[in-house]
Amino acid sequence: MTDPVMPVPDEIRAAFRRPPGRALMLGHVHPDADVLGTLLALGAALEDAGWLVDYGGPHPVPASLGFLPGSDRYRVLPRIDGRYDLAVLTDCPDPDRTEGLIDGARRSAAAIVNIDHHPDNRRYGTVNWIDPSAAATGELVYALIVALGLPVKPGMATNLFTAIHMDTGSFRYSNVTPQTFRIAAELVAAGAPPAFVSNQVYERRPPEALRQLGEVLSRIQVSEDGRIAWLALPAGLVPDTFIEAEDLVNYPRSIGTTKVAVLLRERPGGPVKVSLRAKGEVNVNRIAAGFGGGGHANAAGCVVQGTLEEATRRILAAVRDTIGR
Ligand SMILES: [Mn+2]
Image (cartoon, rainbow, N blue to C red; front, side, top):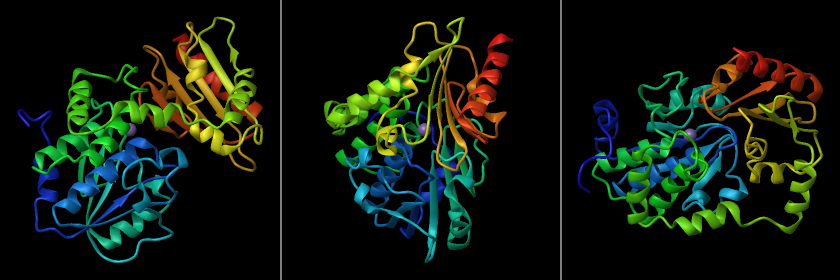
């Protein structure tokens, strides 16, 4: 490796530059490729350096990400047992997203390391590295592994490449920078297989998924001025596994006039889950924050109490209010 891709804060490096101990790689609710890929890659690098590493969080690895190397090591943790020298959280802006596991981590681990690219990260770690200029936490963890002088092996490269691939919509979103491509290039050189990752992400649908997709897409609505496109999904319309495997908010987003795309997902007995995506200058993070949620300027989410109709009305009003200004 020649020049470092980006500077890594000294205190983050220092947290790992110690005799190998025990580390817990702790994920958040409904883990996606950025959190899993970074935890699995960093954990594997630490194991190579002699650390004993456990991996887990409140929810399991979704079937769609079962191809990530080492994902079989990731456990659902009802609580945290044992002692750790470090607990590492990646891509997790809010410690409440661990469903309380952060409390056990604080009791069990001598230090909490918090690595993230969400601008609204709560800085809950003993050491925090928050860099919103990174398209994915995968960029940061790659720089960290390199800075620690640990080899990036093919499995780690696949995990980190997938993390970046997913958080950038396959290198299509406005968060993509020259650094994103530099790191992606280094990951491919280190053994990440782009065609394999694309195949795993896009080309593993069961046959019924296309019929379900047709059912879902026919429900997309567009505002009169064309700037807002939304999809409201009633509970039970299609299986959860289908929704989790599809990035459904991308379909209203794909309409040419869309400035803000919204996916509203009703869940039986629970609040309505809302995903917001912006194209261009609208900051959907602010809209989500108005409902107690968060995320990035171009991609954010929140939950809204009430029926699907009420939630749709309230969210669309908030979006109109923001776009109008
Ligand atoms: Mn991320």
